[in-house]
Image (cartoon, rainbow, N blue to C red):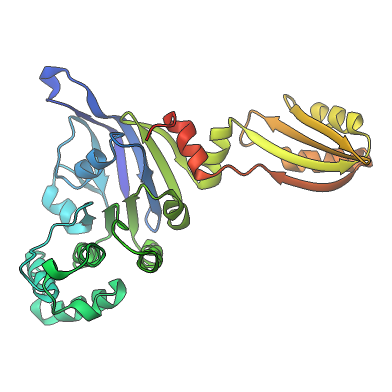
Length: 316
């Protein structure tokens, strides 16, 4: 659905040879997938979104949205819904009038526009404020109006920049569920600084730093790459030397750390540099082969915050 190939955006134009906001960015977001876009301030997130939504031309590189190239901005905008961080709105209009105007700008038929507004008002929790002026609304409600406006024309793809900004905890849960429902049928690319929300909503995530893509994948894939490989925590009873020898003989390059013994039980950490290595399966088979009793085994959990710091050097 979203295909980006070697996107670049240079400050001041190519002739001035200044720095890059985005450098050699390539990624793919599938239909029916929610992709998180993460990175510290100045990483290039907003620039990336502005290029994909045709508000800012790339200095070089290509991208397609639902098969439509960025060189066809009208075509891209027909298939795309965009919610910027500070959603623009006509503050002197009431919510219904504002959404009617946006719908007419998209060319929606008048006969179905009001039904579409009611549908989105229900989905975004706007039923109680449809007749209120936008300048009377809280920031959270204005954000909901912006989200509804971005979906009026039923786009195939949604790009959301900080969609939960200004929302209270209950509203965040509602918008989280809405984004998950949208992701079942549409493609969603969202940026947020609230890492737990990204983790709760997104199927995959990518982290930018200094305008470059550092890592992309599921939460577990990102965690394994941040660790530099697979990490397994074990607790067993038996001959640990025989277990270590069998495991190393079966799976090369295993590293054993923090071996502790207490009351006949052994706790240890096993690492392997290859994130795809069958470490857990091999450890289980080695324990069986050595007649060791495997009491506990689990992969080490790394939080998304840990991954973010590892991939961005702890920038904020």
